[in-house]
Length: 197
Image (cartoon, rainbow, N blue to C red; front, side, top):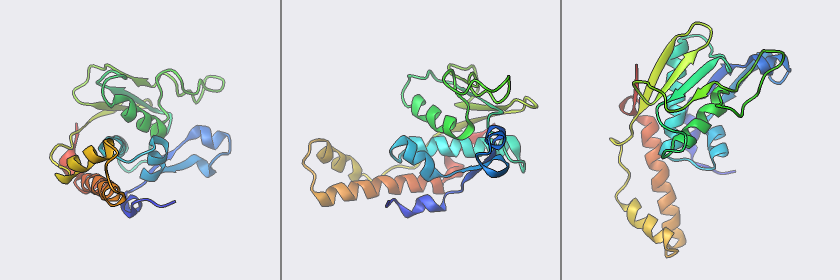
């Protein structure tokens, strides 16, 4: 499987998952998610998927500091409606990493390890996404804005050709490379695109 090499330079997100530990899935319940993992699930790499990954990474970093985040112990609130814009895509990435779901998640074992009802939409928060620890109620809010990192102007022309079925194989390849160059630039400019409060 071939993919842009910069995927391998993006830091993984490591969590401790009590359910995985209980069921013997991962040793000590330690689980890692890479950007490649979420790209596989999303089916593509784009500024939205990158932003959701960065949002989760920076949110958990601020929420836990030097501690390892506990998967299934994190409530997530999103300001927007689930069906608005790309909110659903963002929520799916956050769910994959944190385990938090609105209704469809794991209901638990004898009152433990439940993951459902940990994600909420249309939240009254001062930012895009709020991450909250269930053990101590500490929370952080994260906002993502990648508008300062523009794509190559040629992308629009190439996308038009692709959508019309008029692009050559070389133009198709060039468009994909330019698209991923922008995603890489977003990861390289994390401090420009993320606000944590």
